[in-house]
Length: 372
Ligand SMILES: *Cc1c(COP(=O)(O)O)cnc(C)c1O
Image 1: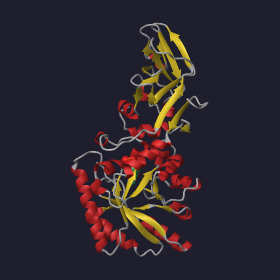
Image 2: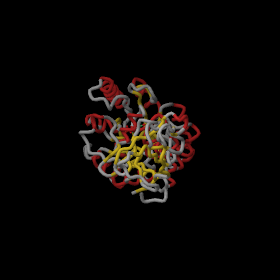
Image 3: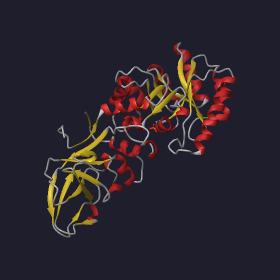
């Protein structure tokens, strides 16, 4: 471990660059590439991940909130920035001030944005979000043509693009996906028929970018895959991604416990024989979900060691087999490689009953990030 820190998330920015290049290479020349860096870059750090993605050729960035977008602007990032959902009405001044492109899904927001734009004497770009079947956010596909035409009355508004989001892009051959594509295509045709130029049309998240080239259209929006994590088993064979996050902690204590002694809250785990226990300085507040207690492994000395006892907020304990060398100060690996062994984030996600997305975000909560 290279830092003074007891535990950290090491982020390999060259992996993010590699992943962006690999994904971008799947799309035809001229297809824009949006790197999605919401939620602090899925736990990898938004500003650093954004810079890495832009170095590798990303054209613009996507985020979830206005606050995330202003952070990127304040870090000196000047490329187009899109907020992927409609922000609160109160944010229109901030959007204009920082040149942030919101998604629009309601007429009330569009009106407020248009009024503010006119008051400033500027034209504000937005992307119309169309709901084609996920039933989360967006103007319903059948209402979209009328809605888009209705926004033409606001002189300060420019529809730079329109988009939808798939519910099942990660499941090859899913009929729900086919039906969403069809509704989206029809909505775009009808919008054109209304005399409205749809601009940049986009629909693909990482899974669709990899699995559905027919849906690439004007731009793809990749999040999880730029961090080297696969959105689905089905994408593993199709694109070469390198995980960008490695999570490590230094052993803070090595001790022997006698047969029958318990470890951690509740003393739920008890030593069946005299056992060496190593304590690591990270816990569920750092993203090692408590539900992983007793089922996950940690790498020490290049070997898999079983985590034992309940995972605490700030610490966890590991059983060190006799053949494994463990000393205070040694590096233990929660996610990543050590020696010949590797623990993928996906392995922890599966054990925790969740997806790699949530696991990565969780490691972004408190662990200091170190860029390598
Ligand atoms: C988060 C998000 C993405 C990125 O999805 P990944 O599966 O991480 O690639 C794309 N589009 C929208 C609208 C999103 O909210």
